[in-house]
Length: 180
Length: 247
Image (cartoon, rainbow over all chains, first blue to last red; front, side, top):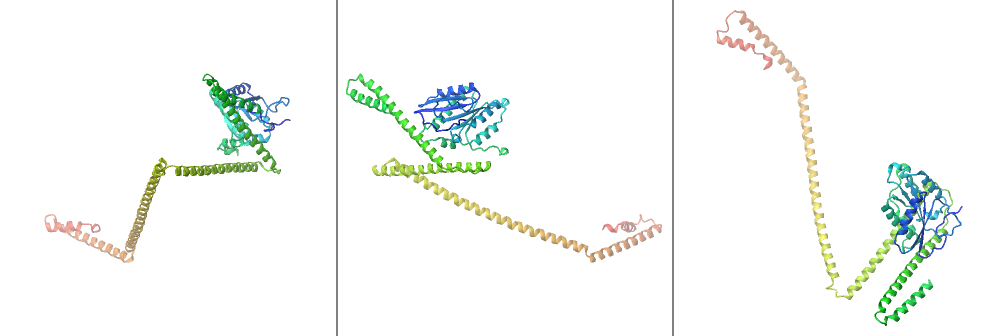
């Protein structure tokens, strides 16, 4: 059972690698394309995975940022993500993990309550982003944000580390009182 | 990395060689300069990146040296501990920012001092700005003083009003008690026995007089004289009709 550990390999020069984990292949592909279209000085590589653990026979560079994509319309994606979370080392959650939930726009299709994802993100102390990945403009904006996060996590931005970005992204709202 | 450096050195020497040449070669030199600039920026960026990554690895090593407590704590305790640690991080960051600010301020003030020493101290724009600032500050202090005094006056007036209100309240209370006492006295007087006996006597006298009146009336009526003709008799009879209880 291989566990993803951050900083276990030496970084490649001027390269940042991100990993998108989620069950919706089309959405992940589109998001990865938007991310790669972004103009930035470093080389970007984006890996896509349906679930962890990743097959260990592939030689891959060290992963700087993991984005778990949860589709609020299907409970299956949430389950999958929760199972994959077990294969991630604890030190990854110091700023190199991000949760992205999509599909919050169509309220009547949502089978997962917003608070569930909020609680999940709160338990893992990681930032939670909301985005409707079907809409082109929102996807482009989210891709920009993710690329910036990826650059910070890869160490390409001097003076900002993944942990400091995490404390900057900490949301001021606590989970609703009925769940505490 | 070394290869890149060598290429860059070659480009620079080529530049200096061509700089003394014809003007047509100047454009090519410009393009090569741009490329070497790009290489410089790339190198500097890579340097910054490797520095940052080295810092991250070092901090990971330092963090791993700390032993995590093995005791099994409840989830709430763990959450509380995590929040404490996060707050610690925040405080350290804030302290760092404050120190940076103070350092920048100190640097600014020394630079300012040196600038002032160099230039003519009376005519620079800086001096004008500082004089303006001093003027404004004096104005601010004056207006603050004035507003403080006005507030004091307002406070005094309010105190006086309160005192007056309290005095009037006590006076009204006195008036009320006096009135109540008067009413009590009146009631007492009304209910005293002397008044009662006097009232009883009055009633008896009225009854006696009424009886006497009726007797005289019946006397005159019984004498069967025509009392309506004589005016004096008429007056007497009518007077006897008067109901004495209504006087």
